[in-house]
Length: 174
Image (cartoon, rainbow, N blue to C red):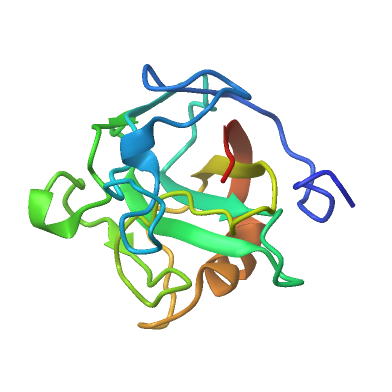
């Protein structure tokens, strides 16, 4: 159960990259939580994706910490109905006041019930945590997810529409 994808459907993959951190590398300090006394700013990193199938009609983005000591992980960010014409999100797109999300994209509340990116914040003395950034290419332009749904509900809703998936894992420790 150490694999964060152990229950996800198998689909083709495409590339997800960030100039702010490398695969398996440490997230920048500013991408740590400012709310949870982790010394950060809750700023989402820049994300670029490419190589997705030509029939893609929209994207969904999630950020999940499978190492959180909750028994169910921790959702840091969830966005869906990202238009298929969008192939990147700029740094700080997860801050609503920055107004950097594409028109039509919807952000769901994270575990703190905030509709924003929550930075990394592993508990003291808990060791490193993985933050799994996932972009799912979908074969529908819009998902109808009930308002106020959880990121887990989004994962359930998009399950039948995924045509490919890209992932990038960043790490943070206490």
